Amino acid sequence: MPVYEYVALDTRGKKLKGIIDAGSLPAARQRLRDSSIYPIEVKETAGRKKENAIDGRSVGNLLNRVGIRELSAMTRQLATLLGAGLPLVQSINVMVSQTANPVLKKTLARIKEEVNEGSSLTQSMSHYPKIFSSFFINMVRAGEASGTLNIVLERLADFNESQQALRGKIRAALAYPVFMFLIGSAVLFFLIAFVVPNITRIFEEMHQTLPAITVFLIVVSRFLESFWWAIVIALAGAVVVLRYLIRNTEKGRRSWDRFKLSTPVIGTINRKMAVARFGRTLGTLLESGVPLLTSLEIAKNVVGNSRIADAVQKASDEVREGQSLSLPLARSGLFPPIATEMIGVGEQSGNLEQMLYKIADAYEKEVESNVTTMTSMLEPVMILVMGLIVGFIVVSILLPIFEMNQLVR
Image (tube, rainbow, N blue to C red):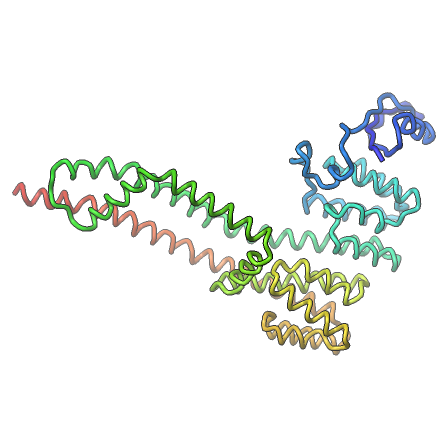
């Protein structure tokens, strides 16, 4: 159904702006009049198809995607309105007027119309998988079924905000080392490719026998000076090919996931992040009333690693056959013993959700600590490596000068 943007006046003469679904332009005007709103201007939203508005990936919507932060804010505000006793349709209508992102705004308007026509919130949201994940939709379904939608939406907002905060802390910790590496590499590349050749040409014109390290520096600098463009193209091509293999091929994705878990230091951090994400997701779903098997299926898709996802799938299969959750996770060898022991204790005590939260809290803190430690070690190592390279360049240039001085004497 087309979406129309309107400018209208209410019964008090106040100007209103909004969007509305209707089969045609006259139908949109009639719906506004039926709501005691008098349209001034009504126009279709640039002929965008429903899928484009949902996906947010058309050319016009490229900069208007729905981010986690916007979705979290919308979820918390909707929970607040429902908790205050407002009806669902009225609450969504308030969110439509409050939301700035055009994609999310149009989506909420569609959801409001569908709910007003008798659909459940879960059914309406499930039509927009690019915005609302299976995790989000199953949480909403559990909230509607239990009559605690506002509480479930609060948990959803808490979950999204905690995940966003963790990612933000990791990015902040890595920002300085990455920036330092990029700037340092660019400076060294410029120095070797464009500065050193001009200096070393003086030695070549003197037809003097040069030290081995100076000859090596000249060869490297000449190569970079002549073929720097080929190196840049090769690196860019390698990045494009690797991204394609990782994103579009099963073998490439699994190889990358295996590499992420087996790399020293970084592998440990990735494993802990996946376990923390698994614990937080599963605990949130179970606490909201989602069945265990459904929760495991969702948690499998959010851990971010195919090997760990396979382990969760095997555990889900064994749980379906009557086994406990902790034993197959322990046998996989991918979950730390402490985590599986805590899950086992939670199963026995009937307090699995709280144990999963404790696992998530513990490993999120460990990830933050490990990233901070790693970056604090990276900085002096990078300074040392760059210092050695600069020292090598300086020595390579100074040695022939010293030898010339000795010959003059």
